[in-house]
Length: 90
Image (cartoon, rainbow, N blue to C red; front, side, top):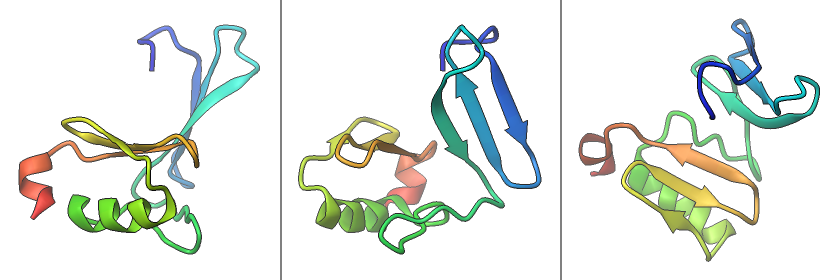
């Protein structure tokens, strides 16, 4: 996200953060944490290790982008963040 001044709402019980454009009305990103239970094609990637998540998401989208701590599917509009790549990967 852009920084401290980016309008956002945190729904703690649901585990969802909503980030807004500068207008404060139009959302541009949703972040799901701990207690959230989002699924894509019946798969919940939140508590998965990086290698397994990459394999499963790769079956849904053959054109993944990857950097040091993130796996991105443009097709589905999602990013999977793994802050400790080396520990999570294997």
